[in-house]
Length: 138
Image (cartoon, rainbow, N blue to C red; front, side, top):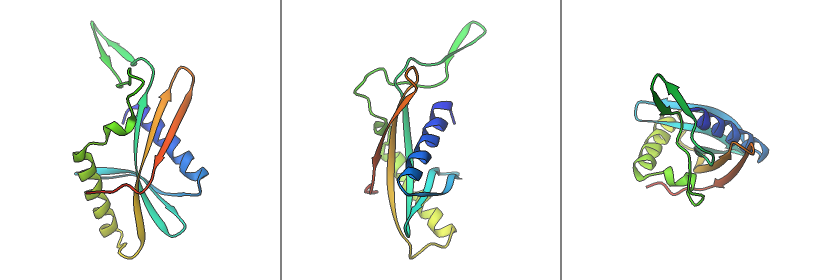
């Protein structure tokens, strides 16, 4: 995971805790996908996908005579982090949720899926968070 992505997940956890969620698990991983955050509020589980974009110029690392970009940034101010949630990612997300529920023996607990979209301005050192609850998974 890159630095921007890790930072975004950390920000998402702080956000969720401030809104009454308890973090149950982070980075639950299977070959076919990963759950960024599993949180719980009241008696309901929430599976959270975190999408983070940086609004600053790319970090460029010089390696010999070549430069490599260490993270992709949004140069267009209209670009939204949630635009990174493709149909194939939704399908993987759904499959990993099903695996998690089955593996943990959770069959009667209510649950939902959510997306936390974060725009990070590294120059100003601020992050804007959008919490999109009750995603419809297909």
